[in-house]
Picture 1 (cartoon, rainbow, N blue to C red):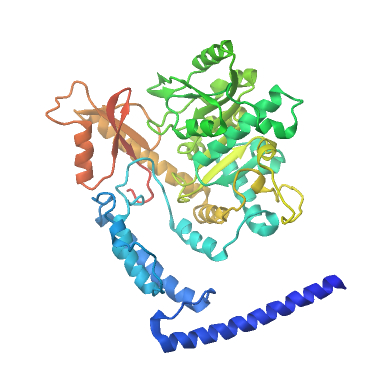
Picture 2 (cartoon, one colour):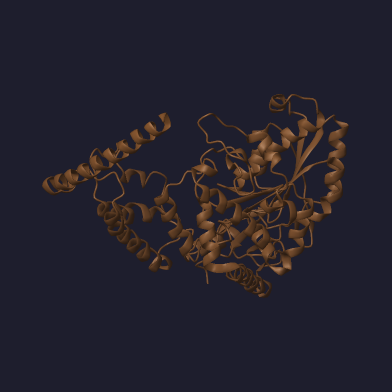
Length: 506
């Protein structure tokens, strides 16, 4: 009876709130008519207003993409030039949305480095698409905060479904699937966040192995200064940053040039481990690269199976860029190796999978490796079981609140289908193959390393007559001609990275 009374009270309160809202809305509409555009805007989402203003926003984006190839990829400005366009204090009164869109065209778009531009070939691509763009509007409108399954059941369940879809598409098998009941995948902001999460978990796992009788809480505070994480000198700087966060040492092992590119060799790793053990250090984890940032080098994952098993290493495969290639038949064997050897794997959906930024995927062989570290709750959280379709993702990484990213990825997968995504990936490889063939024919240029995917790394031939032509001058010439590419270095020599695979690049 008491519960019924409470429900009745809440229901009456909701009805009263609805009446007050309608009254306030009518009053505000009349005030807006009386006072003009400076009247306070509505706070609730008005469907008619949403459709009206949404149409204008899509018109702006349509014009943006229609003329994108005609504008410069990157603005030629100095730091602070755009900040001067904005007042030092926020506005005190409302601004009409149409005026805001005008300001976007006038003050925002001119300051963008256009990552979706067809001539953007720096870093690696950040490939977006129509379903990725429009899905963000749906996600924002729904405003779902995925604290746990009960906070938004479809957000959790769709993430489970989509992460298993992706694992199957990429060839990650067995325990990496949620359906296995053992491991599974979740979405992260970036690859760097994913690596940081797993390095913290690798540290705690090693302490529990070394001291089985250690109280559960004490493993988080144990001295980690003797734990070592191994990686090659081709590893992205996110790798060492993650180890610093976890409080572990980093042993950088020089990669060797094998088959025209750089990769870590198991014999060198074993020598480094022997050296550290002799110094009283404890091997903890190994970071492998599948698509290193500078040269797209591919570590031979299967080569490390024996040493990883013998030393009981947490093996993390950073496949942020090149992981999507596992969906192509030519690279399927590498995915099978990752399924056998890796403890965890990260892949970006933003670089080469048409999902837009920010989208990163992380899979683990055993979810308990994450939940042992990140599990936390309180009395205000809803009680629930942990089934295959209701994992507490808040217990798999640091954040409590989670965006509904799985909706975006689901819409992309549904819109293009796996065949469409594979065709997009193959198109990037074909574009790079075309450029590689032109470089081989060129009298002044050659490939600094051999690559297989969408990155081409160029350098001047040692025998080429320079006549003032350098990698830097070539980069500047390309930028003057409307392309955005950046020089880098390989073995101390200047090179030019050309990253193909953008969704607008033909």
